[in-house]
Structures are given as C-alpha cells and as structure tokens.
Length: 276
Image 1: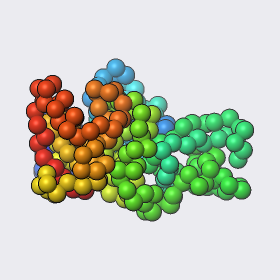
Image 2: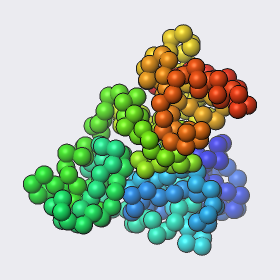
Image 3: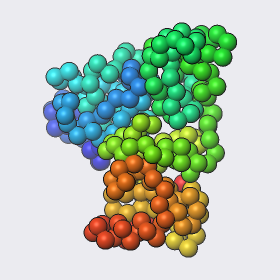
Image 4: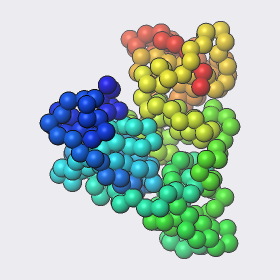
C-alpha cells in the first residue's frame, strides 16, 4: 500500500485498516478541518520539515496522532498522509456550502470592501456560508466574501483546465504547493482539473497512472505531458503551461524547447501523454 495514502505506521494505524496492515495499535481518527487559508502537510512534526502538499481552508483532515504541536493524519480531498500544525486546524464544523471559484479572493471583516481583509483564500477553498448582505456572503470562521467569487459545492467553476492553469501564470514555484500564491507542477494540474469538477491524485506518478494514455500524435489542448517527476498541461499541440523549477514560476513554454531543455538537464524524454 502506498504510504503516502495509507494512514498507518508500525506503531499506529487507522482502525479501518485493522486486518489490512500490521501495527502495534489501531485507533479511529478524529475529524478536523483546516482553519487557515493554506496549511502545510509535512513529512515530519517540525516546522522546517519538507512540505509534501498543502490543505486549503475548510478541507477535512482526519487526525490520528498529535506530537510536538503537530497532528498526524489524512487529508480528505486526495487522501494524502502527513503532519499538519495543530494551530492550523479547528474542530469539524458545518458542511461546506460553497468553494472559492476564482484564483484568489479576500474575506473581509465586514460586508464592505473598505473593511479589514481577514485572509486571502485560494481557488478551491471550502466555505460554509452562514449569512448574506448585499453582494457579500459570510463564511463561518472566515469573513465576508464577494459572493460572486464563490460557487456552490458540486458546481464546477470552469470547463477548460488549460484556461484555469493560465490563471496561475507567474505564480512562484513552491514545492508541495497547491495555493494560488505558489504551487508545484502536479499541484497546478490538480487545482486546474479540480476547478472543472475532476478529482485527481496529488503527485506526478499518481497522476500518470490515473489518466488514460494517448499517442503523442493525438495530443491536443488540455492533455498532459509527463517526464520523470514532472507534468505540464498542453495549451495546444506545441505549447505547454507548467509550474517548474527552471523558471521558478508557472510559465508558458514551447513544447519542443521544454523537451530539449529537460533532456539536456539529464531527466530524459517525456515518459508519456495522458488525457484527463
């Protein structure tokens, strides 16, 4: 079983995995949710530990263990397992009613654009609307959003994942990032496709296995091209958009140029083409 997606360690595992994985002890996780715009999910219970991914506001996190101010558990959106700062979590509240449908938006302290911003929330963040006033909707635990920036849960906010990805253009490259202020290659793919209503895995190898293969000659806008440890979205047959450590940003690049550059860096040729 993939340890990235399995809530189990030699000493402790999810009670639902009893009889499936070996552990000294089994327990039932407790449901919490993210209480900050973006929370790092880390490799270890330390603030300087490697960030594996991020959880966005309102996403659920099943907590099985707590250590040194960090909670060990599993994210509900894509099943990723790791450590999240306890301060970034809150007890599970009412189910989300809406999600942020624009790249990023402020929540204000009052239903007034001149009031103090309470936080900057990224595409896909989950919001429970508890009041409305004029053009504003109040989110539980957040503040007042421009309601036009929210979409009801279950209603896709976009139809073209490539167009969504272009909205992130210039966002800094951030290892393990999923927020609009910085993200990595597979985070960009996951966020762009989520906006169209497609739930996909987190990492490049997971995404490569998840989507059906196509021949290179069949490639078109919205398809994915993979290298070892990297993925990009096709804008057309000859152009890609991707979050990458060469530009250290989300950038548009000619496909042929990217293939030559990545090959020269020792990574090799593309490993395959996939269609979401």
